[in-house]
Image 1 (cartoon, rainbow, N blue to C red):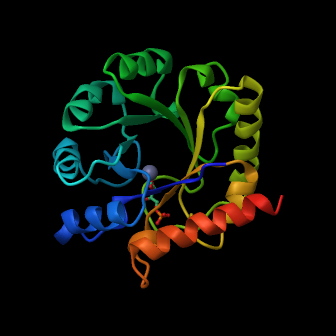
Image 2: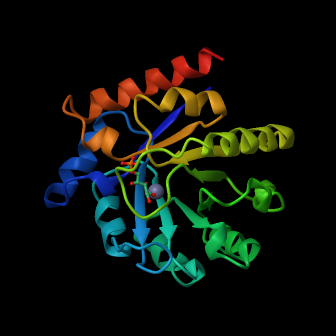
Length: 225
Ligand code: DX5
Ligand code: ZN
């Protein structure tokens, strides 16, 4: 199993964003996770395409843009132009999800669909074969540094079973409350992409050591199955 660690820059020190992105790039991260919030879909505001473009200039890693915004279809083009490699939209924010996913692909990037903690996995059944990633929110989106909601692990396992039944290489990401104490169980439940904010950027031992430790803990949790 190939476990991927995607540091969320929401937890980075914005006064030195370039340095922070370089540190996780050099530290072995597999992607940069960029949390875009609109103050409507979630009760917080973060940043838009200019920040994606700035990050694009300092790393070659894939940029995973997590759109926690209403009507995400209005902004797909600008995020791709800014340098996104993957756009993840929320099932709850996209009544025409199939069209939105098609549009993301037409723009030449990978598509992900995210599920809030209360959203049943059945809602992605029809779209699953069309996407490259499912992102199970393991906290209510809007803020970093929250504690993982344990019952979401059951949904991770349900999505894993659905992906395995399809036999397509669809990634299963988890986002929120991922740290050394939770990543093993998340891996055991079937996740293979781990978004981590505080556990990487807040680590006293530095980003590289934190990423390495998370990877080891994921593998150990998985092997303990
Ligand atoms: C939450 C965001 C997450 C967040 C994770 O709405 O989607 O990506 O940054 O932060 P941690 O890892 O600190 O829980
Ligand atoms: Zn996120």
